[in-house]
Image (cartoon, rainbow, N blue to C red):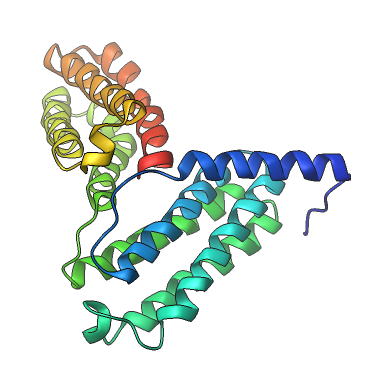
Length: 247
């Protein structure tokens, strides 16, 4: 079911909103040494915006963010799919991976047009893994990989943490996982490029992430079930804000 725009003022408002979001996610993180990774990092900003929008409730805003993500990705595909430069030139699956990301975007677009934002958000998560795997198998590491490592463990904790509390010594299991999160948060700080370390907004965002982990760890150490249940869902918001602009 396609969603139409109701009026020109509404459309202008949505376009301004999208422009503001694009400015928000245009982070100053340093670029890589090769043009493909640089292009992927540029394309990653509108991708993050699409993830953010599909985690909300506005179909039109999600459509616009998705359209921008698709357009930026298509530019990368057209420029590099046939003949990528090093280090991707020896990757026999390079073009196929780019095509898989494009397919994810097409599926997410269809879901957005049907008003299925939750499904589209879940679909888009696959693109993050495809891009990360592409870099990994070509020995390319970016700051996004450290953000992704934190995200993976955070999602594991959010999915299973409450269940662990019902198990024997569940609080201790949570404490161990909080230790993992603490380590990965430290990596977010130690691996941040110089441009991010000197950015006050990044520093404040990272401090909020670290504080959310510290609150969970403190609750788990005290084996305080109520405090743990309060701290668990509070992990997501500070990470999401940091990822949106700097991920």
